[in-house]
Length: 367
Image 1 (spheres, one colour):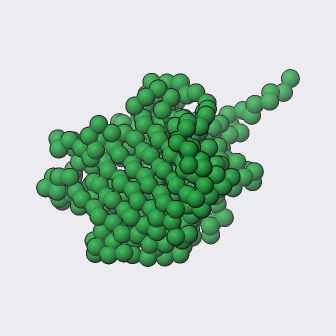
Image 2 (cartoon, rainbow, N blue to C red):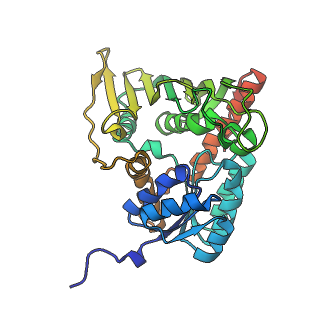
Image 3 (cartoon, helix red, strand yellow):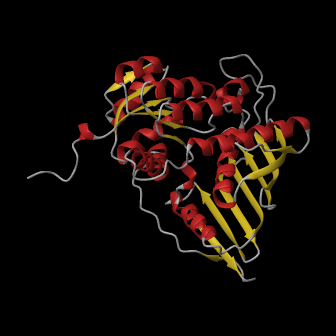
């Protein structure tokens, strides 16, 4: 009797470049029904440990070798941002669809080139905005579409983490603007930018103030001083006229959370997710309507088993992204969040960086 389940060899092949956050993509794509055939990282010994843990057959120290040998159907780009453009160009030219982690690039020019290269090759491209997918955020978006808030007046958010709050924490490429393009704004603030765009519309202009927690600490492996911001406050105006403010910080002791509050003429929504409680990946949501106080909104999401944080993170928030990519490749749905979404977020990042440097308001140009 024929099986209703396609054999593994029929599933799309996926290769992952970069195994920092990229490690979470391996179980995510496997859970989505794809075959992860190769992983790539310069530290080959570390890459082999990841491959062994997830049953990935091939390991490469160089992405050029991996693309030439494997010819994968999908390439996940999870490297430092300064490498996104050349890898995306080569992957699309080789016929692969592309999922690129955020921020899309280190500059508008490179982000535009990534979008153009993938479109020219007639491949599907998406940006790794995985934080659209907690159940509470999905519900928030649906309620916004239903108009429960009315005309948006103001939006407030924060994205806080403690990973580099302690002065003894070792630096990485993320502290180096040459490799990262942006600091906390590219690490964390870009997700707030995307969630605001996704729920409330486009940014029109911004101003910002940025800071570095420990400016004398050198970036690991470079000898250069840290020059990418560890925290950034942004104030903005949307095309609708609504006001936006948020704080992104990777130097916030005791925090591992993000929030988004949207207030309008009919009511308000408040979203909160902290990764320090059971079932954290569902998030929480509250609604206040017609002058009444906030009340919880019932939200249910599928349970995710496991004790490894990166594994749970991948299957809870990246698997839905992978499922959408696979559906888009089959022509069964939109490639959303798209590379164009990544580009539009990049424009806000670039405006915020300029605003923080010049202490002025900066218009966000159209994509």
